[in-house]
Image 1 (cartoon, rainbow, N blue to C red):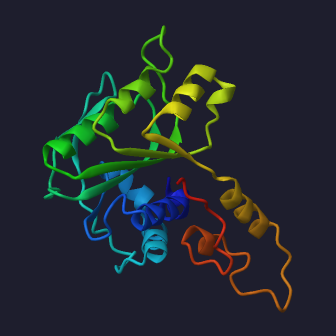
Image 2: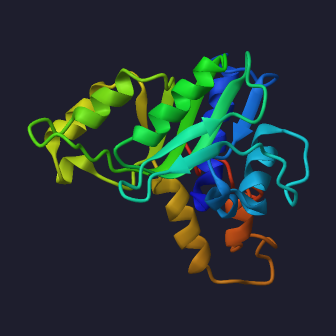
Amino acid sequence: VAHFAYPFAVQLREMFNQNVISREKLLFLHPDAGSVKRIGPAFRDALQTTLGIEGNPNKDTWPQIGKDRDKETNVSEAKEIRVDVKGMDVVVFDDIIDTAGTACDLAKSLKDAQARSVTLFAASAILTSKQKTNPAATVEFINQSALDYVFAMDMYNHTMTNKKVAHAVEQSPKIHSLGGGPYLGAIIKAIHMEIFEDTPVNANSISAILRGRHSDQQGMAIPVP
């Protein structure tokens, strides 16, 4: 997830512009202690630069959600919300959406605490179903949950694994796929770029791309309407 801050930020900016969520009521949360590495300085820098939010990317000031994890089932549930979320548009970043149990439980807890909306961004949406007879059960679970918006990079192609899940995702009012092609293409181009005397300073800088500070950043990510 640490590498996709810029596409996430572009989507958030579009949501601001369309008045889907409020810049003034925005609240970033991270789900547990393990997620601290995923929202490091480069991640926060990309968000702040792209969204025009002031802050020090080298200092983690995001509230953390308390969670309990069952060691036998590996399922987590939110046990406490340590910050006032009333009326806030809460945005959470995670690496993988698997069965979505933790995410849906978290969204319910946030809504019970009177959050205005809950948006989840993830690097991959596996959407594993616990119901063998219904492979799209997790998609249906998300559709019926307290989550308002779910965005995942298109790194996992469900049309290659289960077309029923792919169709369910396409029809979902909440789950949206973010295209990673232009963004990853820009990174590959930078890696193999030949450098000349007149080449811009950050033209081949992967760090600049990840932080949303590349001289040719525009067009690397396309938001979902």
